[in-house]
Amino acid sequence: MERIVSVMIGYAFGLLQTGYIYGKLHHMDIRRYGSGNAGTTNALRTLGWKAGLVTFLGDAFKCIFAVLAVKLLFGHSHGEILPVLAMYAGMGAVLGHNYPFYLKFKGGKGIAATAGLLASTVNIWMVLVCLAVFVGAVAVTRYVSLGSLLVVIVYLIEVVVYGQAGGFGVGAPYVYEMYAVAALLMLSAFYKHRENIKRLLSGTENKLSVGKK
Image 1 (cartoon, one colour):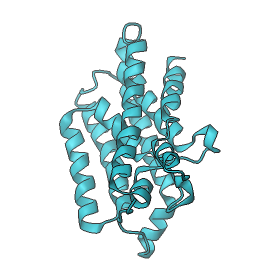
Image 2 (cartoon, one colour):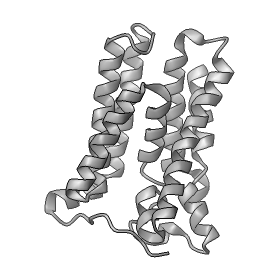
Image 3 (tube, one colour):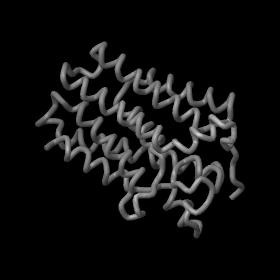
Image 4 (cartoon, helix red, strand yellow):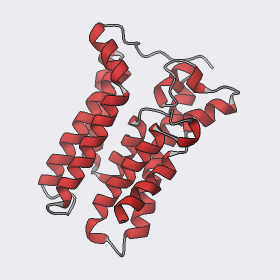
């Protein structure tokens, strides 16, 4: 039951669609422009750097707050599996971000929310590695989608390595449960980026550009 509650808490936080709200404040539905989603990259392309930064931070912190809420709720009663519940909260936040019910389940792609989960559940070195992979990939190719996909792959690898080293402080089967959640997040990201993947393979993917608003 505590896992379901954690997912529901995460989903509730994930419903805060930063890009959509920012767009509405500028009298537009951001989903009607660019790639058609409410995430960071589309906000960046459509409304500029400020919109992209605000959207990224808002979407990342809603996941961080979801994890904190679950830790506060279950910290005393389920301390032995708290890292597992934090992962479920993060997954819920990604689901809420990607599939907000009040926007007909049309949200973003979950990368910024996943970044929030990364920042709130692992150590700083793992965060820096993912950041370096993303920045490096985008700097070289200018494909944000490629950088995003590489990050979720690296994140899964890091979770497994960190877990096997005892970093999460939980044993089997809980640590394997965490691997499964991380794997689902990676698969979700690939699914949401399926059109980007097709364009990457065909050489027609849009490169990073910034709106002027």
